[in-house]
Length: 252
Image (cartoon, rainbow, N blue to C red; front, side, top):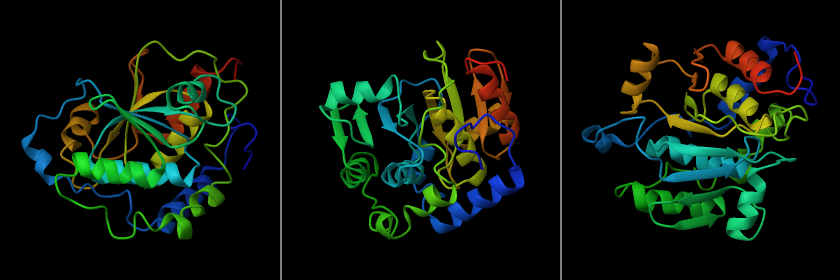
């Protein structure tokens, strides 16, 4: 696996095998939605998004927050902060005073928080409607949290040197849930390209699944939409090629 140049052709059999092992290492965390009560709420992709998450895909503590977001069926604006970031790490330093991840801003309450455990507890207290995180989610990072990072050889950790310096003007949208192996590979690429995107969490049992069905006609993830160009796809290999061809400074 050539981690230095993520745009190069890949052995997708090997990629999917390691990503699937990464999912198994995290058991069921980040797979199911527990937000049954949101069935009674209007679900739309056009609402303003209250939560902004600054993170990078390979970070085990960021992963714990994304797992909680899947459980709570919360969609967020994701601002990838890989090593070598030219945009989003500076926002975190300016807002919170230090460069540490994950970092979340809740625009609805005006609160910003570091530390994954504190973020998870806050999300469940504010949005969990009395629920608690799945058993072991808060405690598991020290035991298995690094396994996906190791198995994926650091994918989603470092900004690719040929990424475009400026973000696209319109939104990118990804339907995903944290522990899906195919979606993980797409999120890694979005991080390596430092592309901000709307993360629509559609874990098992998610009321948000209707949005995915309306968009793609399927319950399969990932499903990616680039509202700048009209590109849409549910095939992770096609999405990967599109991202590196469209958002790099070199002709691939």
